Amino acid sequence: MRRTGCGLLAVAVLLGACGRQPAPTPAAKPAAAASAPAKAAPAPMFAPVASRPRIVFLGDSLTAGYGLEKSQAVPALTQARLAKEGYPFEVVNAGVSGDTSAGGLSRLEWSLSGDVRILVVELGANDGLRGLPVPALRRNLEEIITRAQARGIAVLLVGMEAPPNYGASYTSEFRETFPALAKAHKVALMPFYLDGVAGKPEMNIADGIHPNPEGAVIVANNLWRTLQPMLQLAAQPTAQTSGSR
Image (cartoon, rainbow, N blue to C red; front, top):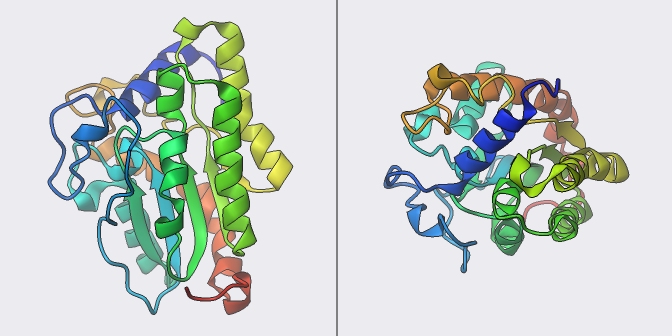
């Protein structure tokens, strides 16, 4: 990803994850998580069909689809494309607005229930917004990755940006955490979730920071390019060693 205008993109993505805007749709109800990490594991947004292999999106408001109809969120768009192209997966949206990497880690166990084949990890934006220590972010993400891999689950890690107000050193360390983890653990990486959307008013809802339906389509298309190569192997019964739980 080109770094031109990186400061604007960083502020946009991090503010987009904080969930300070008017309450989202009733299905998610994440407003209480806006200023602090989730304190308890919430119930899944919907009950997955037990007989189908799953792709779980573990993330914050950018995953939850803040300000959008459920069908317009990136996980739902991914579900529609999977069905169109004949893949057997069910997508589970485990996004909670305001969540940090620590909050995502605390919700990991219930998020991985069932026959999960792929875990999309979209976390860290709120860590950067709050200036939380990068080593803690790294540890949380690494724990999520290794726990998933221990279950035979493939991981797609989504890169994030930190705001420039914490200084160049913090911003650089934060940014490099994602590709470093992807390389160390040999997982797929989407370099930046809001590439092509952040900082573009026409691609965001009224708050200017969460993707609107058009922006969500761009994000979903970008993510698909990383996800698609993972699908054939993940669809095979042998791709997950632990089977259904």
